[in-house]
Each structure stands twice: as structure tokens, then as C-alpha cells.
Image (cartoon, rainbow, N blue to C red; front, side, top):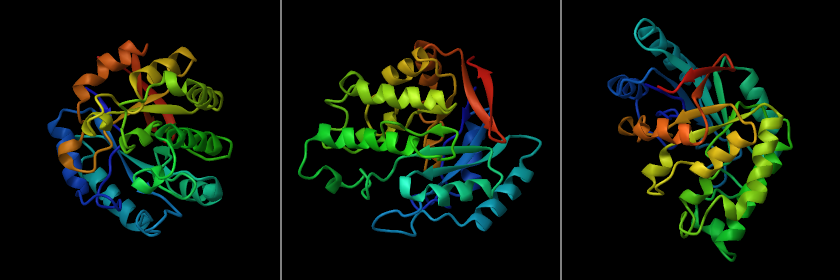
Length: 267
């Protein structure tokens, strides 16, 4: 049994899922616990208010449900922060002002454009677009951004013109290795995000090869999340997780409490 520590509810601009429904889905799937990580993306293009989390409402509902399930199912408080160099101070202040157990830092916007939109790939090759995405992660890592793990490091391949047809760790190993080494050097982790299977990639985000390379380089912090935006996607394809982690060299996975990593054996 595992924890799903990346999921979104109706407090995120791209989800309508009731928080209680996500919890109920997790219980039905026999998870050991969850962390709810709704979006906060300040300075998001096109729709600037779409991912501005209403913290009083978010916290009120969370604490009410945490109390409801206090004796039966553990629920932890998280957030997924959209990282961009120009908003580091805003993001860090937001994180410091709230009692989060877990903070995912993610790249959703690259130099003013979300790779979710087709225009990100206009007038250049897919490889150039992917490289700019990875380079932008390094830009974020050279700031003082406050987070615990970097989310879905190869998020961009979900939306590229050919998705991951021509994509591999080896093709971008120079920049990916630099990302991984930098994360390890500052004590940050990565996640195994199973939404890649949901998006038809046949692999998690990041790929198995990147997970293995992270471990080879000395990385130890690895969380698990399905990136669910609907109850039916909670713990999506989690039956694949133990083998993926073991093949990457892990005998455990990580869950955060009060911003501190806890390590659980893979059963």
C-alpha cells in the first residue's frame, strides 16, 4: 500500500473534484494516506487568476476533513507551486505563511507560455521546445525557490506535437543530469508521477530512465503521485509503482510531514 501525494481538488483552477470525493476514492483504493496539493500558479499567462488559490477556503475545508477522518485515514496538507524566476519572493512568502506538510515545485510556464498550449511549439523543432523547458528548470533551480520535490520533470512531453515518440532521457541527458545533480546538491527530491500513463505515454513522468539516473547520482527523496484531478484518477496505475521504483534502485519511497521527509519501505 502506498501514499498518493499529488492530487488536485475544486480549489485548483483545472479541477471540479470535491475534496471529500478524492479522500473517499483514496480510501476505496486502500491507500495508506494522501496529501492534497492544489495549484498555486502566480503570474499564469492568459488567465492570471485561474490558479490563484483561495487559501482561507482551501485551509478551512482541508482542516474540517482532516478532523473528520482523523481516526481512520491520514490526510496531509500540500501545495503545488508553479515556479518562475520572477515570482520567487511571492511564492516563498506564500509557502512560509501556511502550515504545509509538503510543497511540490513545478514548471508549468516557460518564459511566459505553458507547454500545454500548442503555440509553445510554433516556429521551432520539438527538440528545441523540449530543451527550453529543461533549461527553464535549471533557471528555477538557480533561484532560492522553496519547495521539497520538483514535480513531473518532463511534463513537457505530455503535450508536444509527437509527445514522447522521439523523446528519451539519453537525448537530453546533458541537461537532465545537471537538473538532477543540482536537486541532489540542495537536498531536494523528485516525484514518480503516474499521470504519464493516463496521458498515453506508456511511462511515468519522469521516465524510468530518469528515475534510475537520479538514484545512481545519489538521489534519495522520491515521492509518488498520480496528479489526479478527478476521483477516478486517484492512485492511477499505482500497481506499477513498486516495480518501477525497485528497478530504479529504490527500496523505499518518501512522504513529507511538516516539510520533513519520512521514508517507507516498498512492500
